[in-house]
Length: 264
Image (cartoon, rainbow, N blue to C red; front, side, top):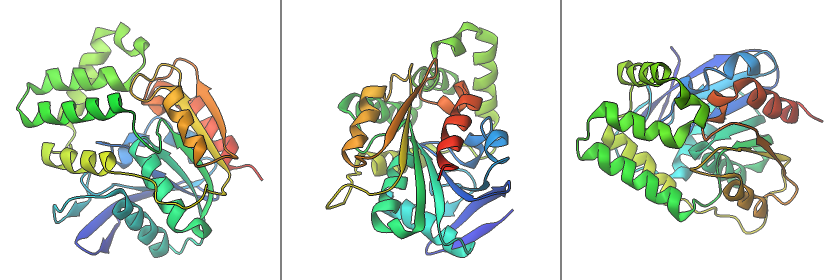
């Protein structure tokens, strides 16, 4: 599997599909595999570039504290490595912050932006939830219980109507061979909690904000605040989707993002 060697890290990434290049930036505690349900819909239209951020998946680094700007620098190094002059960018949750940082620093390298279930600044409740979830893992809470708690913030209500599906998801998460450690979750969380967009003026880039109607971690009102940085952006809300909207409604998610990114 391909990796990119950068300072103090080996960045793992995957490539798939054909078409204009699309950089996919995953959220907190998520890696390249998190795009799974939406990936078949997206790779029919785009050449996907899917890295594992530092602190997650198969990327390996020196364990130093993380910052969103550093994750954006890794993403830039990756498209440089692949010879991509300009890429569309699709970020989810923490990946929204990384996408904004990348665009602010190198707007010439970004085509269109699709920003899903993220905000330029986390609401206080979301920050508290993330801090509490990390602290519970560090305290040694039973892992089955912890995953169920985590899922409450990720998925729409319909997910919980099937107890068997919930238990299967817990088992799958626990069996994942590249699961994030509590220490790495802490590093990523601190990067997100410390993020503040560094830009002197709004970003002049075509952008689409995508929110989940049932997202209780970052509801549509929180996502909408990012319009302050992207005054020309559009926004769409996916019915029946939670924070992990690319899992709750993968086809609708991929269509909304793909139609916008493929636009003129």
